[in-house]
Image 1 (cartoon, rainbow, N blue to C red):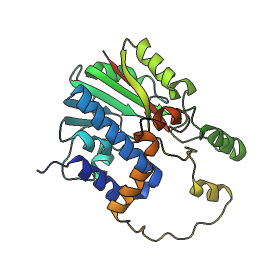
Image 2 (image 1 turned 60 degrees about the vertical axis):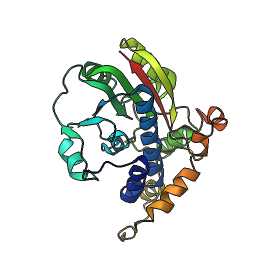
Image 3 (image 1 turned 90 degrees about the vertical axis):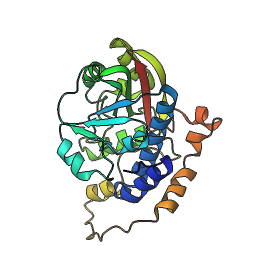
Image 4 (image 1 turned 45 degrees about the vertical axis):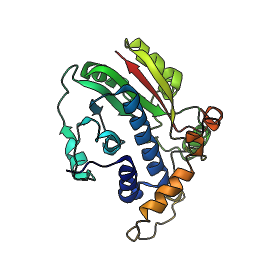
Length: 258
């Protein structure tokens, strides 16, 4: 079976996940690029994504041409059903074997379930990668204000421990669990703030009746990807990146080693 090139992965993501919204697709492209950079730098081969509720496992496509991928999740049947390409990872709903994987990673869940890091460490023989929404971003005041005004409970990924939604907090969590920090930073850094709520939430709060939605027209994936790349200037420019973080970054991450 033909393995996808990095360019083909990005095009596939843009062609098949537009229903998630532009910001989410932008996030996916940024995350899969980070995974590719880390794989090239640290040369891990056996990779486990432990708990894939947020990513649906899709972002592993970025390194599937280089690595043996396993996606483990309690709701693995749903993830298998929604998988977007013929080339598949190993799917599992069982607890992973101890010390089997070069890298065990998780995206945007550790702030709600910090205990998961112990399972990640047990499954890893070398690296652990954790990432969480960035609390110190410009979008946080808008997100807090939204819930204060609406009195709606937070169901976004931004719920969970505030201390684990900072770069320093993730580093502290890793160190407390006996890990050594290898690399940390920020990912998904567009120019707009991450408020976590959107126009659909606003219409629902204002009780504006939604019009029956027609099937969303899929935009040309090449043009869609070109637009995303044009909005990645803060992330890809070595001079702007230090100035943009952490205020513009939507997520922060830590790569640590046993």
